[in-house]
Amino acid sequence: MPADRDARSDCLFCQIVRGELPATKVAEDELVLAFHDIAPRSPTHVLVIPKVHIASAAELANDDGPLLGRLFGTIARIAREAGIADDGYRIVSNVGRWGGQTVDHLHFHLMGGRAFDWPPG
Ligand code: 5GP
Ligand code: ZN
Image 1: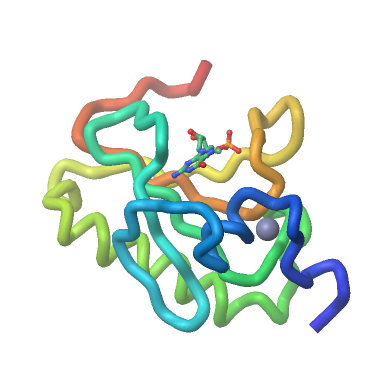
Image 2 (image 1 turned 60 degrees about the horizontal axis):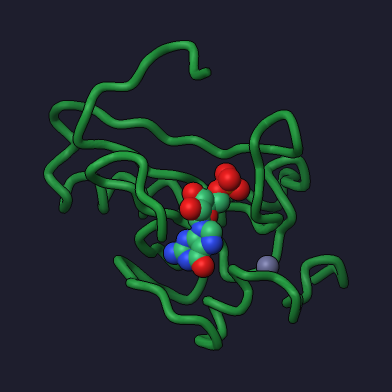
């Protein structure tokens, strides 16, 4: 594993993965962790992250296919379990400053329980 994917002591989500910061977990396996967003913007607002530190979606490569399959499979399962799958939902991954990224550890927002505008503001 490349060194830039080592856990970061200064990374909020690495700290949650290691149990150093509390989070309300929704799902977990050896590769991914899902937990409720601390400031939800919709009735369902879950963050789904890889346990390994990846700075953003801009750092993903071909070898990450299995990890991405696991992340998106987890998202779909949580959506079904949360009862939002039939009405639909949004999956968002913000990248960089203009993308609105505030935590530099790859995460997918699973948002549902209400309708969303398009395009986003
Ligand atoms: P971003 O702005 O990078 O796309 O998303 C970061 C998300 O992480 C935000 O929605 C924010 O509310 C959430 N967040 C920030 N700090 C914490 C935390 O300590 N715990 C949890 N559960 N969510 C957090
Ligand atoms: Zn991290």
